[in-house]
Amino acid sequence: MIASRALTTSLCLSVGCLAAAQLPNDPSLVKPLKAGVMAPQAQLLAMDGKATTLKASLNGKPTVLIFYRGGWCPFCNRHLSELGKVEKELSQAGFQVVALTPDQPSFLGETATKSQAGYRLISDSSGAAATAFGVAFRLDDATFDKYKNQYGLDLEARSGKTHHMLPVPAVFLIDSKGMIRFAHSNPDYTKRLSSEALMTEVKKLSAR
Image 1 (cartoon, rainbow, N blue to C red):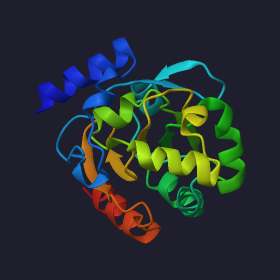
Image 2: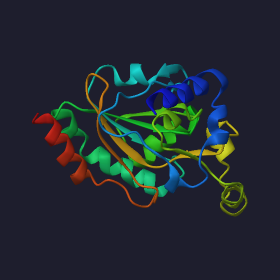
Image 3: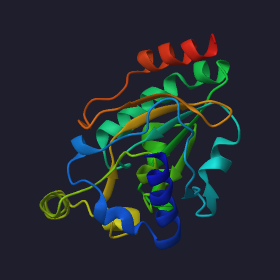
């Protein structure tokens, strides 16, 4: 399983995530990584558009890693805002917050303003990280067209890609060695891990 995921990650990095064609069309079919495995690596883009990596973003620090659908999603903005309210507590517990999205870098500033997030928002526009963590799915064509034609939401313009990928909203707690210690995801994008539940898990890890 891990070797297969590593191969998928390699393909994403080298050929622009051609693995998107193999992703499930149903978010309930994703298979997120679980606690006890090392966080995979992926190429990302910082808010200024410069290339970076997940390893550099984690920087050997305990991290709350968030996957969110995009700044266009009100549920995501609400979740990011709620996280911002406990960022000080997370920092006191030794954790930083890093949030990844399919949105390309040009949209990140807008999202930071909407959510009032003081932590880092980073573009996973290629879907490399979402795929490597097992939370990526491909939006079916009918839903993609509905978003674009009925709601005026062009996901290709948001990501700058044609993969039509979205992540199932997810939270991973990663320790200083890069090991996933806690994982939470829900295919129902309207349901998110509460800040209270997150702090409970963080305190458990901090007490070890």
